[in-house]
Image: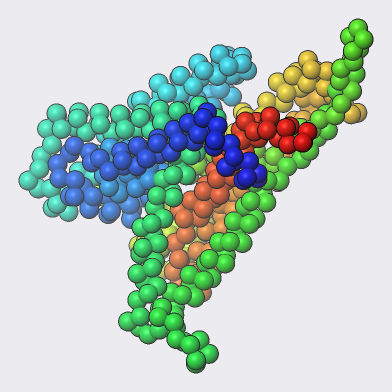
Length: 477
């Protein structure tokens, strides 16, 4: 990364405007996260949300990607989940229906139509999820005798669902505005901001526990006493070291790529000659980035939400209980409830499904963003070719084989990284009898590192483009 160039590029008005537009959108997003849903007493529903998050992994994931919008019962409660689900559905249909696949290959015009259909599909999905969550939360408050005096009218339902649907659509619009600035993917950036916004609360709670010396202070070698809780200190130190190691390998995996040399034929036009040069085509090992992890978590968590709805409508329903049990990620909050007698074979179902979905979505999303036929056609039009490979279909097939092999290692690596929290939980179950509960934080770390690298790379590329003339002048001098 050229950090000196990035800071220098901020003197450019266009670059300055783009960066601060994104920062302004993120600030507006965080303000939206504090506006409560107009449905009864917000504090009452916040308590119901807290209870729901302990039961449903989808709720915890939703709270993560909405930047605490669920926990604060704000109008962005459903967050970007409807848009993510809509994107999955539309992209699956694009691969299944030849007409849609042709449209997706029809350049910018086709992609705009598909994006528009995704936006349209997001609206009913947001409405359905809004109704489901309001209903579940209200029934939870009634069951706990928290809202016995409040009975929502039809107007309350319409107003609340409309506010939550509008909040979801505003987030989708904000994400597209960020994407238009040309500095990273907008949806990923908002999710990144959501996760980062949870850090102050986590650090405050951890700091309070670390500096609580009611059980004694840390004594080093009998000659130095540090005013921190000994157990918490060693746990924090161990996880800090482990996190730094994981971040290092995540950066290496994200930066890993295969370089293919492109040769350009020499052309003579009059007294001038063109071409005869070499270029490179970098193909990343994990071209899909963090999108497969987000897709897999959202897709796998939906059955738990359906099960929660069934159990709310019909308490004690075995099918609903089975959906919640099977499709809830094993965590510290639900381990003692679901597995009172210790770990069973069912514990491995969720991690196995999660790994499989991450693996499949990596292949699926890479096939969408890396169109080998389109790249081969563009190279042929520009007079470019890969040494030893014929232009056209042969080049497309060659690139397809390279991408498939890279995807195999990339999907396995991404799946194993996503499994790290579950592996850690399993080790703690064997050692202490209970997991430490890092499933969501591990996913969050993966998202943060990947999105940060992608956005930094986008900023770096734009900064180099903006300061290119200054760089040429420095070379001349």
